[in-house]
Image (cartoon, rainbow, N blue to C red; front, side):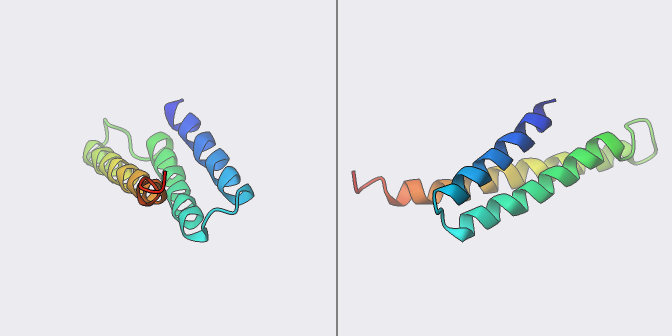
Length: 88
């Protein structure tokens, strides 16, 4: 359920960025993140189970990929705010 909410959040964030003429770079980063997130949800629910041979390791590796991708996306999305902090 949590990843379903995260998918909805990223879609809404992309819509908001498009409507507010946000830089295409940051919209592209969120679109790439959305693709990775969808792939993870597919792996999570349709990939090898934890009981299968190598299934546990595969799920752990996929989880690490989505965690590091999430951190990278958050850092990249924060760049405009970081740059504008001195202007206020």
